[in-house]
Image (cartoon, rainbow, N blue to C red):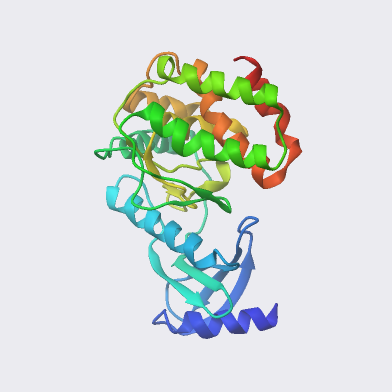
Length: 290
């Protein structure tokens, strides 16, 4: 670890104006190693470090999404300082460090309103300027003119094909999957593309010391706003005040609860492809209804 710390200190010092005092490991998920960088100034920094053939692409697309989310000016986003490619397939993403606080119900209600305001930011088509990643998996973002087409071709089908190639599902489940795809035009509401976080579970936001919500680790696109809500429900939820705040700002189209599992299917397939058979029963349960 000391060798890595020295290595990161050398490169980070080139990017920050203050003298670096220490780099401390912090919890940062399964994909990257994460560090808090303290300095002689009043500002600390958060460093994501990754060594893989995709490290630069993954961190650069994350940085680009953070900057676009920040430009919406409705919810706090960590400031991107820089993203740097290093030797030997290494890369670092340097962000401002934000000290976490504890949320109150009123702050979560405000967070819900802010997410709805973020979703009001729209685009001429579904998609994104480039493909990006969800976890370590590629996420395709070709442009589409309808919500149904985007959900089918850029979300569900790529993950399903990957899972089938890995041998997770049967031919019967393949037929059920295609029945689901064929049913989507009658199920999915056609709304304007929404600027979404794209991977909105409880580990991808925090509340700062001032009580403001902060979005981190995006897998953004101009997509279906209900996917952010569905992901927030997949592994627990954000609490009633959050959803009440969202509904106050921009109510979901009636019938959302019947659609929720379809959106969650995408994230469950991602988990199958990342982590294996433990998530296949949840996928099979959704497919069985079709």
